[in-house]
Image: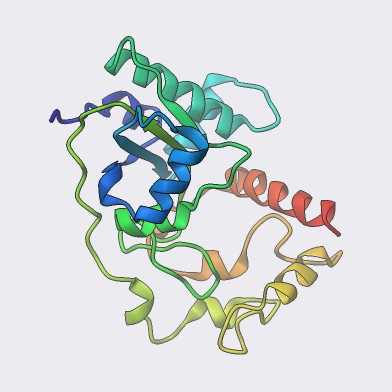
Length: 231
């Protein structure tokens, strides 16, 4: 097996990578992937690529890419270029972004990136909630599988729970996350969560990686648009 060279991805802000042998993933998930994408069993590995912090957003802006989904388009293009340089003559199957939902949180949990938080975003001790999944691909590669990111959920050690107290929708006051309260509040004309999440920014974990205002507006305008679309 070879050690992957992710230098180009790191430089582009796609600084989280996890390589899995398919046979180390849950059998039912692999069977579903095989049925949908790989009935001939051409692929041996799944590669999960994400970003943590602000550097991806800066790279997207510097690229001057103009599209409805600039982060997705930049990420797919960058990963495609990286793969063709690392593995000439091979063609991966990109399954995310895509029309068929991928269980990103399950993959993130296996990679050690994802622990549950009260406000339903993945959290870890290194990045807090300031990370995201960007590209998932199947590949006929022989990369060395990566070790999971170490560390328990920081929420288990948090006694003050500032995210719960700060949430203007009181979406977590009942002991679990009430999505209907969150959505209803975001739709209000005077909502403080139209272009941000007050609960999320109140969490101190990984605060040095917190997205800037422009990136937050971009991300939350997309989610609000989806909320309004399904009203």
